Amino acid sequence: MKYRFVIEHKHQYAVKTMCRVLGLSDSGDSAWAQRTQSRREEENLKLMEAIKKIHQSSYQTYGSPRIAIGLRTRVWRAADLGRPV
Image 1 (cartoon, rainbow, N blue to C red):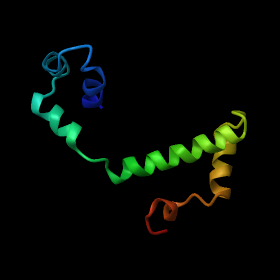
Image 2: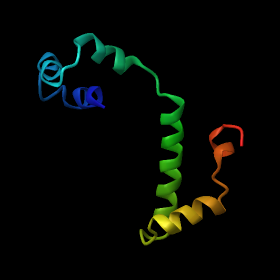
Image 3: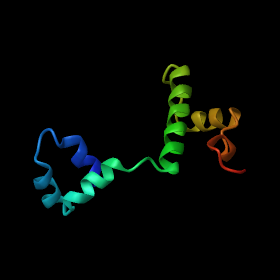
């Protein structure tokens, strides 16, 4: 999470300074930036997109209980994420 902050703000502040203030290594910044997304991050993005679609299709009136029902009716399960049920 700290490295994400460094990447997002490197146009405002020096990377070395941010790493020193946050207690991070300079080399960790570039390693973090080159790392591919984890499977969990990909699954979270898919889930977030499904939540946004349900929320938008309800004209932004559904809260978390209705969105959860919407996910269940769309059969959003582990199988939808590519994992065995």
